[in-house]
Each structure stands twice: as structure tokens, then as C-alpha cells.
Amino acid sequence: MKYFSILILFFLFLLSCSKDYYNTEEPKYNYFPLEVGKYRIYEVEYTLYNDFTGAVTKTNYYVKDLIESKYTDLSNKDIYRIERYIGTDSTLSNWQIEKVYNLQTSNQFAFTIEENQKFMSLAFPLYLNKTWDGLSFVRKDTTISIPGGNIDVYKSWSLFQVNQFSQNETYGTVLVDSTIWIQRADNNNLIERRYSVEKYGKNIGLVEKTDTILDTQCNGNLINCINLNWMQKAEKGYILHMRLIDSNFL
View (cartoon, rainbow, N blue to C red):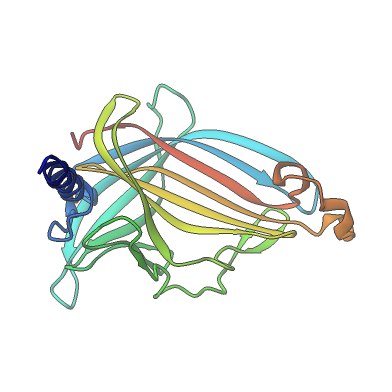
């Protein structure tokens, strides 16, 4: 009887954990909140590898994403217009608009629409190890131009996957009571590295992002790269890291 009671208690514990993190009945739309007038500010570190000059340059700056307005598309669905501003100093007083992009949600997905590419950023309901093709509407052979040449950004990307839930994290002035990690790419071979992770906070949205998009030809000899890490052998590409420092969502 004692053994049976222990089993019951253990089963109830598992159910409580499941309710907190993996309840498929809760879509968790609050990880992608949309409200006109709200903003998020990020500290950004950008490292560029120039294949033409061989230079490696690191830039630090700030990004402010403002939900500027909302409009309705031809399908009568709401689309939110995001204005992205760039700032270069910690006073955050001299913003200059860099670009405009859109965010949208449906019953099943949260979409990020940039440069005419539509990413399926989240898939509802959210639960651990859930996967989906986040690049369904994106040309996987897309190349972008960077100093030193062009690079295949989405080459060898995998299915997007919810790979971690966390609680009680602080980002600058913002306390987030729970976050989810979305693994978007993690491919590594001798001459290519594609790694991308996004992290979303409950009731605030995107709180952190890392993209590592690197290529190398090992100076024409693959043997040169065998024992080198990517910080040593990268010849072309970039590493982008964004981390939230302020927001008026909470």
C-alpha cells in the first residue's frame, strides 16, 4: 500500500510538471504578444568575417523594435507593422530607422515577415520537442550580400524545434517569468556552420537571438582546418547576438 501511494504521488508530480510546461491545451500565444505602441530594445553584437580582405570586425549597437501600427490584409487578418531603429550609444537617444517588417499570428502559427520572406517563428500549441518547418514559405537557396561576397544563409537548416523551457530570467530591466528556446538550425561540418536559436519570453516576445552563419575554404586546403574551431577558421559570414535590455510590454 505504501509503495502504491508513492507511485500515485510521483504520477501527480509528473502531471503538475506537464501542466506547467507541456500542456497542449494552452496554445501559449502570450509568447508572441502584439500590441500597438509596445517596444523591445536589444543590445546587439555583430561579428563580420570578410572573405575579400580577411578582416574580422566586431560592432556593438542597439536595436529598438516598435509596434507602430496594425492593418488588415486582403484575407481580413491583422498584420502588425514593426519599425526597427538603430542606436549606437548606451544613452539610447539617437535612434535612426533601419527597416520595417511585419508580425502576424494565426490559430496555428506566429509569423515574422522580413524582406519578402515569411518565417513560421512559433507553432501552437507549444510543447517540448515540437517540430515544424519554419521555412515553409522561405526560399532555402536564398543568398545575402555581405562585405566580401554572398553567403547561403539557410543552407542545411533543419526543422524548427522547441528544445527548452526556462523560468525566472532577467534581461536588463525586465524580469521574465518563463521563456522558450526555439532551435532553428544546428549544422556543423568542416567548411560550413549554420546555427540559429531564438528565445521568447512570456508576455514579452523575442528576448534573445543568436545566428552563426559561417563558411570557410581553409585557405584552399581542408587539412588546414581539421583541428581548428570556427573562431579560428571562419573566412566568410557573420555572428549576430541580440539580447533584450528594456521593454514596455511588462
